Length: 412
Image 1: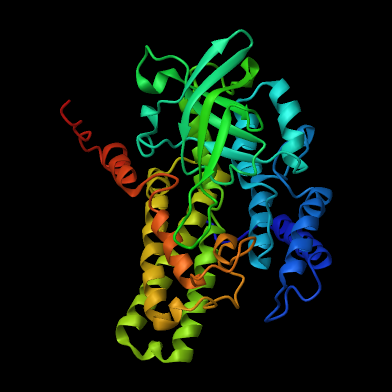
Image 2 (image 1 turned 90 degrees about the vertical axis):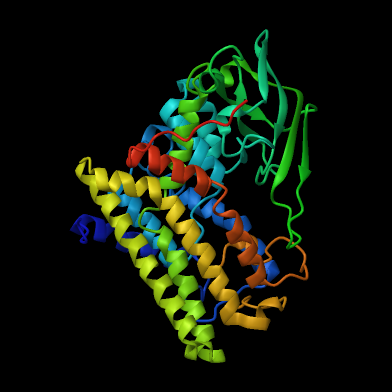
């Protein structure tokens, strides 16, 4: 494992830092900096344009498709500096982190020329249509169908937990296009326009009053035949590429949000005396240790990628990583509630920090009577489900890493 970065990477780091200082609002790096609702709205309106003008959206994409053609090392440094500055790096997570790279890897030249520029300039918003009411962890059992009708696919079915569907222009949808083959083999990956009569979006209200998740119903919805990515009935492979981008995007930066949460937890424990509780101190020490494990494992993964080597230990880490961080974070949020105590039920608890995910900071929604801390706790409960449930991850580890027998299927 290499813990040092080459000189050219550090030079690039200086360039990124200078750009951030010049383009972020005055006072951004000052202790206690905050923005009111109007300032946040203005910042959000302007930031995507600044990112686009700076060329930082999808900067690792090839130059011919609008990127900067950054190397892997440069891409890592870019992500690290934006994370260090707590500056938003993406115009649209689903567009530039998931479906964009998927189109780059699997799409036709026509798909790349049409969709990628709109992802880069932020003019096309996306949502992900994978999970269904009875096909979440067992995604291959999905029931949404797409039947060809001339030069279009006619889509019928339902998706659930579809984040930001109410704002999306397009949805990348997994649908069954061949019902007569084994379930993984008959799925296709479709790019479906959302603004059409055959699609209905219904918000799912959460305990904290938000409704960023949605149900999406398809009733004879349509998309062009040419909107299949990666070839007909090859959607299972293409979807796994998308999930790989989702899970592998933050090898050396993902731990940073946990480190900031840890800092806030220690600060609160010191201020209210909870730090004197030996159980609280032990919990904090355990969380700190696991954050360092995430940091080191990220560097191991980066080293393997840069050197082009195949380390079975690192491959195993990749399989276990999602399960490790999500379960670690759930335990940490329980610890946070113990530290905050009764204060965790106050509506404004923790709102002095911008380090929590935006969905938990009350941005863009009314002031519901649920505290930031409680909202963070609620969100952590979902982390062992989305992106691959811990139960399924354990099966993968057991069967593919440890070589254990496959889990028996229930009797019909």
